[in-house]
Image (cartoon, rainbow, N blue to C red; front, side, top):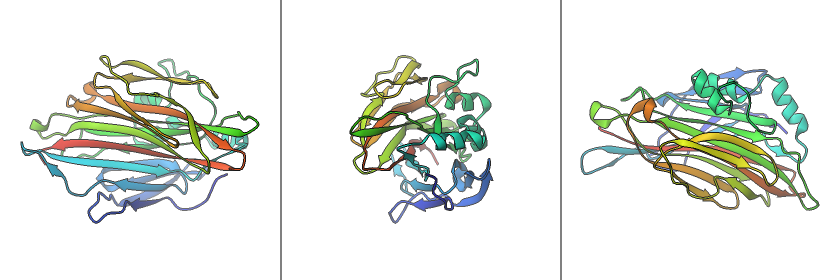
Length: 300
């Protein structure tokens, strides 16, 4: 089921908030997707009709040493929900020429990073994933005061051919990555960053999530994100020393990195997760909302 409409940006509730302004909206593929460019260096690629919500206080918090700390978040509410029978939707996604790699390139990712977002290995062979029903990416390229700062990511909604006598199932994943630079040179220190997926549907319940608990890092070693109870899914992401804090409740799965990235691309960090949701047969469709957020400090 694909709902029609115009992609739009909606500020979160509050008097003083971070609220980039839409510069342009360009249709992609067969018109089923759109590229949205905003001020503040934000580009969103998503299904046509998506709602984009910016969240974060307009004002900063000033630390004792004079640094200013800002919280930022971008949420994409994709209108393309997963139904009890979604095979046709997965076929339409593929027939339109859509892919996560294409979404990432359109959003501004480098080809190398776009391949990582698509969960391809160095041989450009897709890793173990179900067919995709919908996808999108958020890319930040804020140039002031630091052109090398980044926190960006992509999401995927999967086709799941699984059910039992009492329920049917859906699955999805969200990722984010980025880096900061030293504040003394006029850059931004990346302090936190997260990827979050929230499921919306009557009776929805996350029955499996990966990672399922907080993780301690080890020198940015590879960590396997994997689902196996209802569907088979596996891909690799770097897990660094600072580790991840994981929040998992009935409808929300959030993976947050925290620490201090100051060395540019050579000091990159990531946060990624996947989840499977269970729906009662009385619920005809479920929606997956994707959100990434980041906290940075600067003398600016």
